[in-house]
Length: 379
Image (cartoon, rainbow, N blue to C red):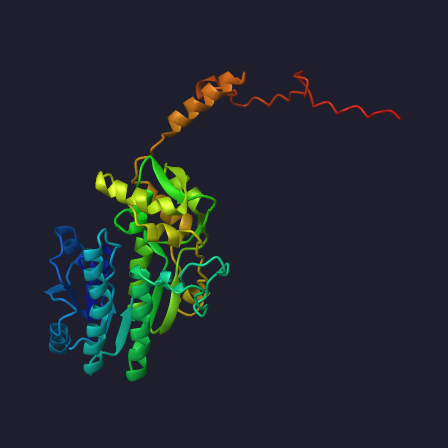
């Protein structure tokens, strides 16, 4: 029995290259072909391990020839794009996302060898509205459909995939909707947003809930869905949630509340002086917050992420240099305490009990012994 022949798109990025390498090392897989329009960097090529690489633009009909010549039976569309800084780059990214997906699906439709299709999607398809429910299931309709940006691309891509499923009902289709992916390696608009220092702008008066997925869990989930038999749409996220302000504090940053209309001006200013930058659309998507129901992921798809939302964010934040160190915070506490007439003990001033000694009880009035009870007021 021959093994699987898998085609993976977007192998110049962490997700695609890591998935291609893991699939190439799996005994059920005979061959893996990684496809991208650009050459992978040495780090990405190392992650691909034993996978082959074919330089091809998925917007080009050449992708159909690759599928036919190799006899591909499984296609994993793992390519994802970051929010670009300029409108010209945005146009090119939209073509890669939407037109590239259309061309890839057309090639899969014409191929008789393709039996499995996995298309990566995003939880951004749920949009962002003040009327959103507390938790999104896979069947929850969006209250506000995204009108632009990669979120809109994800909505269009899922529509094309549903059309492909009607034309090719014999193909198993799985569409994982990932929460924001974070980790020490992956670079996304969200990781660049939390990397701003020393302040991170937020919309004044808002503190949204965040749910994240670790980069390793994202790769393992794609691996599990590729080799498994699950079909349909499934939410993918780590358990638990964080608020936006909590995440900024855990990253060692200071939240900077701003009016909504001032976000675009600040983002352009930061990009002009080359100290970073962020997309106003990204901040606005964070405003309402989004928490996913992952019951289907655990019970039907049979996959449980190893990282919780907090653990995933902490692993990402560990590589960041905090804007304010714990030593500086402790020093500030001592200064404020001194001004208020409160003496704060330094760690070296705390007495260490002798081994084997019993604790000494101190009363409310400072005397040794048990705490004294307050006297009852006589009537």
